[in-house]
Length: 231
Image (cartoon, rainbow, N blue to C red; front, side, top):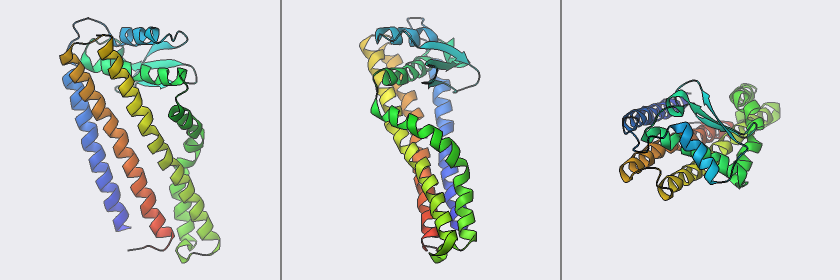
């Protein structure tokens, strides 16, 4: 178990560092005010209109960095610090979330795949670790018997969560690319403002990358335990 605790500790540390860096970047670029004076909500609405999307609403949601696109009710949810603010960070986030709405409207295959995984992962991810533990307690490491198959079932659940993490990567990177291309091509931001938006989105994407690597590392570790690869 010591190896597992070291692994989790290392992942948590990297995740914390990237998250802190992201927050500091957004705080910094929140001071880069847009020359066009547009708020995050106005930018989101303009990007939707420019893509001919008229059935998606832009709404405000509580919290910090809680921004997301909900394909179920077709809403671009912008946090309070993005919805009303008029800076490079708000422009980046607002355009990124609309990027997901554009993906949805254009049937982007990776978004479709992620959406199909959501209901499965929401159920299995929280119990996968316990199922693996249960299998190991029942003697899974011996490679035979009921415990082994219980542990394998847990690994499959864990594998689905890992798959979800990696499917999320192209979805997030593509949304950022769409956002930045639109901000630049429509001259919504100045070159300096664009650099801020680009940098902020890069750090946001890295949080998903760290999560995916962490999920894969955890899966590999427990796979080794189940299949007899103990240290």
